[in-house]
Amino acid sequence: MYSEVVGFIRKQFDSDEFIPLHAPVFTGNEKKYVLDTIDSTFVSSVGKFVDKFEELIREYTGAKYAIATTNGTSALHMALMLAGVKQGDLVLTQPLSFIATCNAISYIGAEPSFIDVDKDTLGLSPEALREFLKESVEIKGGQAIHKNTGRRIAACVPMHTFGHPAKINELLDLCKEYNINLVEDAAESLGSTYMNQQTGTFGLLGTYSFNGNKTITCGGGGMIVTNDDHLGKLAKHLTTQAKVPHRWDFVHDYVGYNYRLPNLNAALACAQMEQLDSFISNKRELAKNYSQFFVEQGIHFISEPSNSKSNYWLNAILLKNRAERDLFLTYSNDKGVMTRPVWELMNRLPMFRHAITSDISNAEWIADRLVNIPSSVRLK
Ligand SMILES: *Cc1c(COP(=O)(O)O)cnc(C)c1O
Image (cartoon, rainbow, N blue to C red; front, side):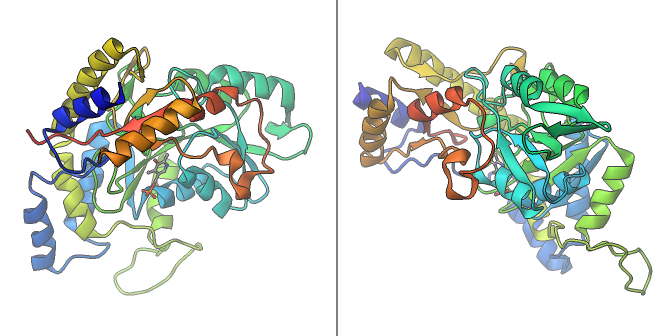
């Protein structure tokens, strides 16, 4: 059975060579735009491509503000600060995520608390969140307070895992009820929609990543989006060293951050944005092929959840148990087809072993069974 799976994957990519999990594709104006920055000497954080990239993201997502940053992690760090997260606060998030979410929370001196995910979306579960809030949280002086520790719950950060939208409307309603700001980690889900609205634009703030392995890349880069006028302007100010605009004076009015995306990277991003729609339809076609094949094989393939359209950033299957998972990982990687288990659950890492963790049996069940399979845009 595993040889048929590996054979089918090879057929999709029409290749006898090593097949990576996700490789970038540069088939548009990438070289032209990057050379343009060099010719113009505007390679650093000021330049027309940075402004253009932000404009393209605003147009594409419908967000009122878009602020380009050095990477997705810095975008998250800034978004959490803008959402009012302070040292000592708790931030609710899912244990099934990439480390960047928890790192950004930790940079502030806040601590993640882990809530389970849904098996269909792989994202934060509204039922699990409701249960946690009802059992463990009270509202005091207008703020959500964790009863056992007395600590403030400042924000909630769901993540749209592998590009599949979480049940973001329900999560938003719960957060509103408890006065908790919602920040969407949409690093993996640019172009994915929930009820026809772009992921990343539901929360108070949302963030994207343009790392080399994401749907589109600019080498390294990130973006903060928001519809809030005050936060949108503050995000731009704080990510550019909080310099007060002036023709020659250098005056700064906050502790700012050097988080602005360089024009050199933004040039690559603008070229990639021109291809985003074709990349996504290419990826959706691959997911359709996978889906049909895995039904025949009796293997569960993760499909887009209801009410959603997924960018299918990273495809995934669920095997029978951890032993089967490990057998397949060994077989496929030995055969030169890259596959990977899901990230080690965050609550199992040494930095977060003591974090508040509610019942996360879905995340544990998924972690035992899930395998990511090659998902790049195919050139032919
Ligand atoms: C990629 C990613 C990020 C951001 O990563 P950067 O490499 O800093 O751009 C954040 N969260 C998740 C879930 C991611 O997958």
